[in-house]
Length: 340
Image 1: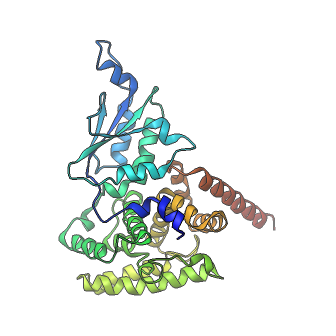
Image 2: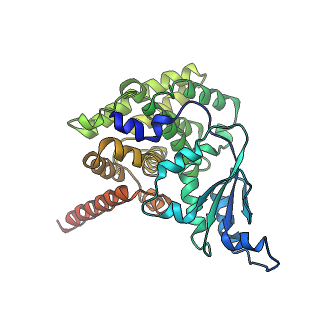
Image 3: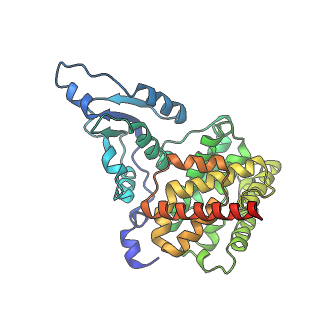
């Protein structure tokens, strides 16, 4: 990583200090705020969208707000959705360390027609800060694994911090795609990239590989064995650890390969996390040429259901262009196969 990028990247300023806890997420529209200072009633029009958000993010406390609390982090909808929006700015604000919980408030200045979509994009990017769990991940065993997983990561290293955030985000994507996900699948989400702690903790090398798919397959193979050993040391039984290793071993394969249903879910969650969380930093680190390759490679791993989920993801404009180009290339290739 160049010195200039280290200075400008939000990763360079992160420390292991935990971000300030989020008390809940509020939706606010300018007209509601104005009505709080007058006797004129204003219809609450966002109750339906908020109900949908509650279903999608059940671990979040939601509220309709006129006047947000004074210590709330307010994200203006117009600023978030602008093509020139600096996502790193909001990353730094979300990760500000502190002890007291605060509200995150998404504020619309107009009629709020797109407020729920904006809130969905924001919660998607920061879902690891408001984690959900299910029966398989709510007990003492899983908490012990989470602690062991955290201990593996030196968060003072920017690339390791990025990998740690990505691991938590993939875990959360798995639970969004499959709320009933079992223990092995959730553990595979957490540990799928653990091999990078050995090979790419301080410098990425994937762009130097002459055969990208072979490089990724080797990464998955080595990571599978490492994850199995770590999980058994954390008290996970051999059968579950072996299933985790199998899922990690196959997660880099293209869509349509011989993967299990859980293997498809892991690959989808990994790909969605790349687009929703990692893609801006990836593009800044590697530049456009390798980013185009990565976007096309990632799109080729995704199921059609996962591709549809990209409509709820805030993509930076350069990544969006790469994705559109990759989609056209994939479509052209499919048409050529049909015409043969």
